[in-house]
Length: 458
Ligand code: ATP
Ligand code: MG
Image (cartoon, rainbow, N blue to C red; front, side, top):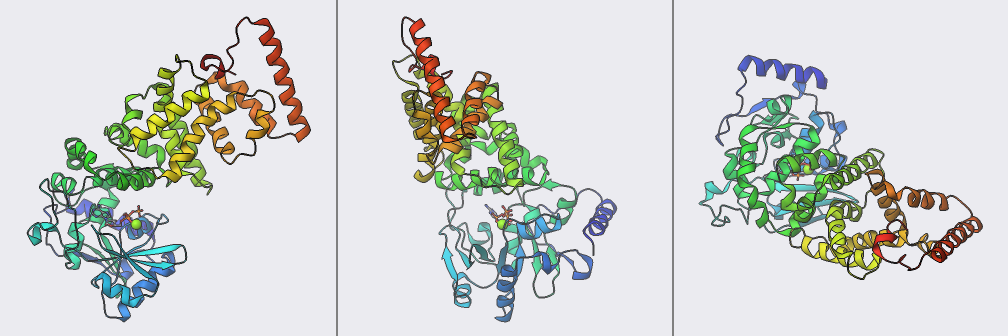
């Protein structure tokens, strides 16, 4: 069956049944089962590795379902980012079936089956915590361990959003829908399963996930979820900083960065991830981040790589700039200003999001390179051209100019030109600039070219 014909049929059904489709009470109704002949999901669109895992589970007489983004995205005609599998085999049983398998996670024990670079995540059916007397739940209702196994039905109701709880059964290739996910995909709705307040309290990261899926799919966030995000937003501050690092990358590195940013601002979530940026976000900082994210989305569309360090450096730039402004009246060079401001901002940021050192170091380099690029005396520029962080720092400089720092135009053009010419001509460009310097200096009483106020303009 074709994708469009399938959705037409779902739309007709929804209209016939009225608008209220989902039993959001968290339970136990018969699932809708859509037979293979009545839906468009085809194995040729699925990862061969995910299929291998499913077939091996089936051969060993375990249940095997594709679930989550793999099913959701294929139904929308998109390429899934990864393929997740659900089964009734325990993680240990899964490990026995696959040589290339590792068990990971404490809060959530999972089997990762490795095929070169592709990892198929295999999760055992889980039950919700209220079915087990709340074991593994903190006083505030937050889930810290989630290893209570259950049935397929239990597993469906404990997932986050209805659109993520659709299962493709490897036994008969049918789709199983307990929570009304198909109708929510049709009406482009992100709806949390069960009581929104409770589900967000169990795991506040679901707020970010909801925003992420709304941004990625261009879906609306259903009203009770929207209201509950506003009520529970403070709970994000209790989420481990290491988990937030990964979530931020998922928000910004998959082609929907700008839409994610817009929603984070709309829901006032930005300050729970980047407090310093949110506090110092003026019009020009907003324009800078917007432009950075437009470029990020474009690069992803063109299948060009994105460095997480560049992304984080851009998201924190309004804060670094503001901190630098405060320092500029001290007797410091521009380089020192950016060194100190960068370090201070990063230290504060680590309290919210645990950015690993391998990204923190290049972020600070990108910021301090803004000062080095501005100071073009003698042959210094020739030493900068081959340094590893040059290209990212130059791109960052262009971004600043593009987003309103128009005084950087001459500097940007100069760096653009010098990359295009021969070594001899590069030397000539530097000499020409230095002669300009010395004649300017002669005309001035007091030298101030290393100080902040003049250095940004070189
Ligand atoms: P994508 O991979 O495109 O980011 P996804 O929906 O597959 O989206 P994953 O993070 O890969 O998301 O998770 C796989 C599935 O596991 C989800 O679709 C959802 O059903 C379930 N899941 C993940 N995180 C949570 C959570 N915090 N609470 C409840 N269910 C979750
Ligand atoms: Mg996934």
